[in-house]
Image 1: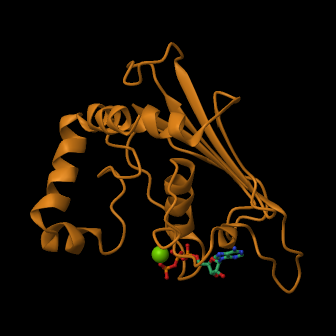
Image 2: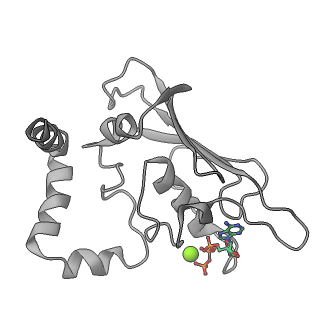
Image 3: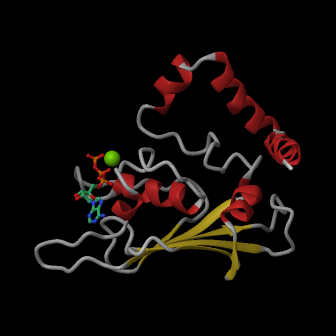
Length: 180
Ligand code: ATP
Ligand code: MG
C-alpha cells in the first residue's frame, strides 16, 4: 500500500488547492513553526474519517475550514482527497488506485466519496479498518502519541494490538449486529 497523493483545498491553512505527491521512499516535510506541517497530517486524519475535533487540534469541526487572513476571505468549504496505490491489493476493492474524499461546508453539511462515488462515513471507516491506516491505526504517530502508548492502560493498548492483528472489522460487525 502506498500513499500517492494528497489533494487539499480550503483545509486549515491551505487556502489554495495544494497537491502533495509522495514518491517511493521517505518524504519529509520541513518548514518553520506554524507553516502548516502538522496541518498536513491533520488533513490525512480528517479524510480517514476522524470525528474528534480535539485530535484535529480545533474546538469545533468548522475550525478545519480556512478561516481567512488579513489578505484573504474565509472559505466556505474544506476538501481533502487521499489517493492510494492499491496494486498490492491491500484493499479488497477491484481498483489499482483508490481515492477517498471528504468535504465539509460551513453550513455543517458533510460528504464522503470513495473513487468519486458518494458514500457514508461508515464505508470509509470500513475500508480502512485493519489496514493500520485507519483513524485508530498506528500509522499516524502524532506529537505525544508515543507518550500516550507508553502510559495507556491495558484496554487502550489492546485496541492498538487488535488493529495490528486485523480483527477490528469483525469486532465492529459483532457490535453492529448486537445493536440490531
Ligand atoms: P510547528 O513546527 O510549530 O509544529 P507546524 O508547521 O506544524 O508548526 P501547523 O500547526 O500545521 O504548523 O499550522 C499552524 C498554522 O495553521 C497557524 O498559523 C494557524 O493559524 C493555521 N491554521 C489553522 N487552522 C486554520 C484555519 N482554519 N484557517 C486558516 N489558518 C489556519
Ligand atoms: Mg507541528
